[in-house]
Image (cartoon, rainbow, N blue to C red):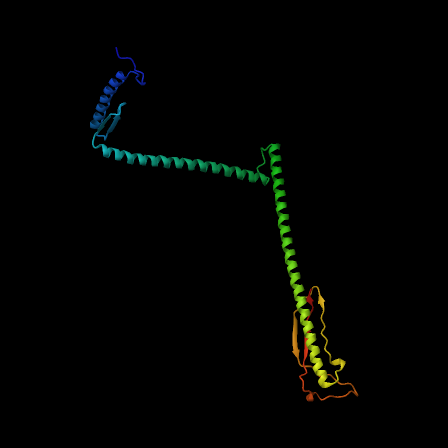
Length: 256
């Protein structure tokens, strides 16, 4: 009659526990030795008792077996890590493919395609999304147009200020030219004695809103004026002072 099955649990009695440890330890060491001899295997066995006492067995060299175990454990951990990483990226790729499929289906539905099988609630949701998108597009369009209008207004104000400055400069130049012309006529009148009204060369200056024509200033010799019948003739070659006139040539009007 065989022994009954022993329940595998901690033995409470310390004496029985020590006896069981000694018997099973010797049996474990015996089995390890037999396995190493029969199967030509490298076996390293390390046992610590409850009191901290060390029992070990190695078929070759314990240190070499431990180093081999560490290397194999490291490779095994790397393989596990690589396998876990591969599984993670495979799961991530599957999730991304599913998201892409959902986005493509939603895009086709927003374009009015693949609407078969949708309920009224689904169609209402798509309609609301389209209305929200259209409202956002219009808002962005109005914002862009407002910014462009403000920029054009700013540039228009700058151009208007530049035109005013140019207008003031032209007025100043015209005044200087008139003053210089008056001085020339004064010197000419003092030497000649008589200045006919036809010899005066006025400076005509006008301003229009849309013209963009440059202004040229030219200092030229005065043209001889014809004398009326019976009027006193004067010998110009006897004049000591230079007879010059400043002519303001306005090819067009300056913009305001």
